[in-house]
Length: 447
Ligand code: ASP
Ligand code: MG
Image (cartoon, rainbow, N blue to C red; front, side, top):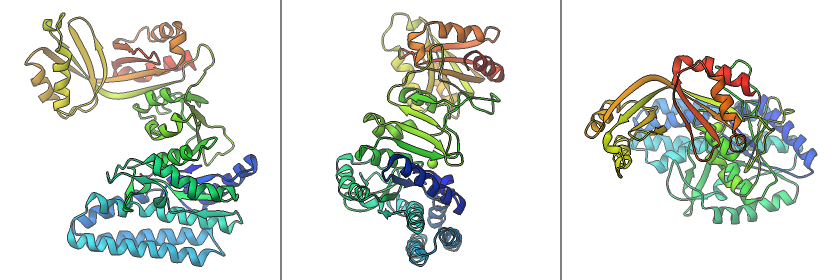
């Protein structure tokens, strides 16, 4: 059970978390592993603190650390009674260490990736200690394990990759025995350490990844990501007024949707779970009675249904035309090399015999890209466009879905249309101004 920052933000949230874990335990008859993020916004604050240290702003950094200490001590005090004294001492000690570290970094005005990780990791170290103590205080047998002693990573600080073999060995040695004794094991997400024991982090948002790693190592039945939304929705509620909850989707569908800012979680972070066929469920810690969204390696949907819609506003279409492309090899390579040179990601691609159209989101290097394309082709661009993507495994089996999607957009000019070989999504590129209308039409048709 992974609880994100908003699900441990304050004493109320932590009390809700305890209730949720208690219920889960009653339901399954076994103790779960609990992975927690830092309290909401704490990692942002730690990032800022590391930056202040790098700028040599020692006093401001110390003031920010002080604010974090006060917040954590207040939360720790509110959620404990018998274990309070010990917890306050531990939390104070962690922050004393942070203070010393930040002071040293500010003197040197140098923050290496490794030091940055040491600063960023504090949020999860203290949040996990607080939650573990709160369990104990509520009479729930529990054990805190420093996640850095279990999750072993490479030395790519700030975006470290797990060493699954070593991590799984340690998880089986250290975590599993406590679970077997019926103890809820609490670990911080996001943090680990290198083989030589130096603190590392998996990158921002990495707690989901930690949960998937631990879940995969321990072969759990299900991984639950507890957050502050009900799950994945059939469309962005800012565009479609009453979207529905997506009850279930496949990992591949979740990946298609992720690019479009369906940011409930980043699918690559749950890969270790999906690879082992462990279902991942997204749940709302404010409405624990809901069933949420289940992500599985494969998913079956009711006939005639799509899974969800997504869109990306304000993209630019670039049209590249050249008669040289006709029956020539190497043309696409040359073309895409230009985008590579200017480090610009291409999203949708459609081709005809003599032209290629692509969309880009990042237009900072657009002029240079067009200049370079002009060396071997005609190229022009059109701004204020948007991408709409209709996702559903059913698109593979049911050819009428594509037709219904296009028909529902009958009067809306479509600029590009693309369906990849996986046939899991249909993508339309159209004028940004047409997005609300087009999304409503598609949503009415399929949901
Ligand atoms: N606390 C970390 C972050 O904010 C990791 C996480 O919450 O997943 O990026
Ligand atoms: Mg998060």
